[in-house]
Image (tube, rainbow, N blue to C red; front, side, top):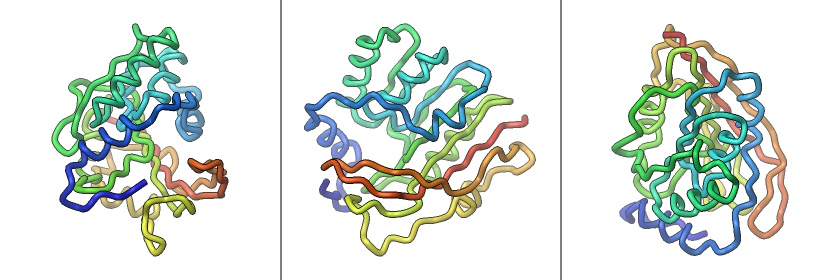
Length: 211
């Protein structure tokens, strides 16, 4: 995948990316999402950067009322079609948002941001702070980020990845408002677009809102 120049509009980049995908999505949820939502009380879930809806649809199948958000309308359209095909259209909602400037209204018992990275001008910290602001009391904020570079990544080979602790510090959340469920790295076997495999590190932040 070609990385856009810093001045390129992020929405246009992702529109082009998803519009070119003709193969159906694999439909598999994030392993981190599956792991950290086990045993949670069901409620309203918000999936940020939902792409073609795999995580949102999986949440709906588990009984959540799930909202998926993406900057690309082409991704939203594909996610809506997939939800209808999966029989969970009544438990899902998909909205287009540029997370640089907006997020869905309401309070959510789960807010998930799985690998919310983007080339171009994207203020990830501000987007995740907005995500934290809509977590309901007793709800979970779940963030996963790349902690190492896969061989097929668009990132520069010398990219330095922050630790989960670094990421949490950058969010500058009021510590008294949150209980740490898990902060740290998790290894997994990743699959590349050409069928490659590699062991990569993900950094995970799982927090429960106290107030």
